[in-house]
Amino acid sequence: MAWPNALAFALEGGPEILAMLAVFDLDGTLLDGDSTALWLWDRVRRSPLRALAFLAVAPIACPMVAIPRTRRAGASILLWIATVGLCERGLRESCARFSQAFRDGQSALAWRVGGLATLREHLESGDRVVVVTAAPALLAEALIGPLGHQIEVLGTSLKHRGGGWVADVHCRNQRKCQALAEAGHGARWTYAYTDSLDDLPLLRGAEKPVIVKGGKAAERRLFRAGLANGRAAAW
Image (cartoon, rainbow, N blue to C red; front, side, top):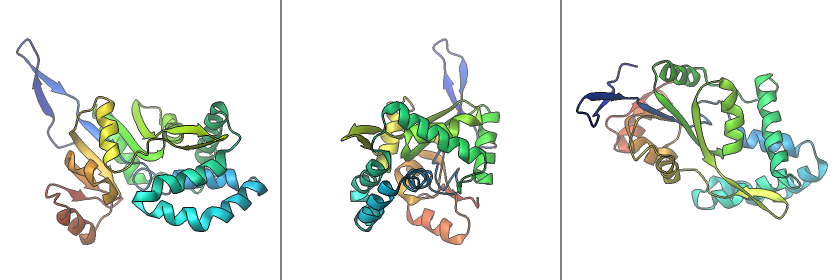
């Protein structure tokens, strides 16, 4: 990467080069598609009872998901229907099966070529890479893990309620920055990549914020958001 590295001074008085931190969103940034929605639908479509329940609540839950204030509650309703009856081991196995189907080309989900190439460039440059996503952390780990690199994954935590699973701490918007801080990454990072201005706090915390939608419209959105040092990348 061409942008300069950060410098710090060790206690002995000598300069120490710190690895830069590159933060990536997952869905729409590294992945072309909504991993959580596809995983949930994959579970629901295999069970007539789940499908009936899903279709019954969808007119209420789906609009809730579209509104930031009610997104966690709406997502939890759909998540519970798709996962009721699963213990933690079963939940992990379900995520692993979905990840395997993705790798086998049996899913509508796909890597975004530009995103994957940029992620690999950072890794090859020795940068620290963190994927921080609103998707369940277990699902994101199952998808990212097979890449075979040291990539930290932060995502939405789940809790067991009434025999199924619901969202606990929803990792979106400002909460992504809190998750990074709690993981020891502080309040500033070198790069941030996302496809959505819902991640505006994440972009504002970066020295080099990138919204992965090319064109003048994306550049205007960055300017209006006050990200004068941001850039748009056509992935």
